[in-house]
Length: 319
Image (cartoon, rainbow, N blue to C red; front, top):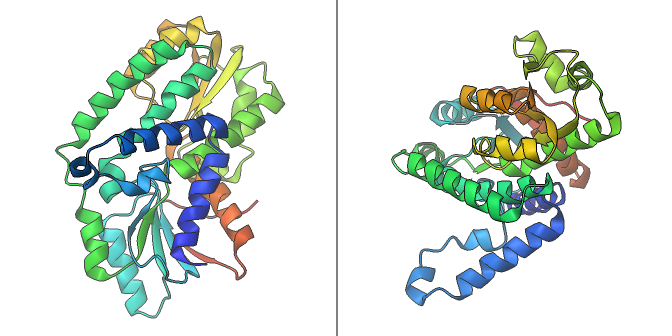
């Protein structure tokens, strides 16, 4: 499969798994196109054209010929210069590597990733919070994250890939969408009464089993094994954690339990103030789950068998 076909498939499947729903994504893309059409010719010169067909700023080809054929992929949760140097060393030793994929964004995918946070506007609205409120609290959080990204040196890994001539791409929100939709569906089917049932469900997945073995098990941060779940909200996508103001609104909307990858102490404390149980499934383990679900779809489309080289916390489990 060609690199450009992999990118197109990741984008398509990311949309299909998007917790907002496909129609909402399509409306967002139409609005983005309208905003682009209204720009002056000067402003269009520096516009991110890829974003007109790809809703996910943090999931894109960073470097490489789009027409190369890909058979062997080295995958890591974090790929930086050290991992790219490792890839080159393996290649020099005779290991075939056609493409390196990082989950967490680098380069342009990192400098613009705050754009995917707009997803929170609609995912929170789906939980019953009025759209005018979600729009306001999310926009403030986006500005905060954008300011934090501005001083970062985002081009280091990209420059390394370019100098070593290693095709390089990132698959962030396109994978996170999969883990969110997958776990929300499992929770809805399970209809758990107690938090311990959610932990048991998570531990049935190989990614969480492995994480438990290496010291990163799913944990209940607010509540206990015997706490009642109430309405369960799985939130594992949208670039970063929810705005802290969201927890008061989620309580008012009737959410009793939130399942996430990770949450800062201030968010956990805020959720506790509003009587919301918190189950942290695990960060790297959840990233693995999302990537594995995405790679299952990739392999189902390939005429030839793909080979995956695991590194930087990634473990391939097939379903």
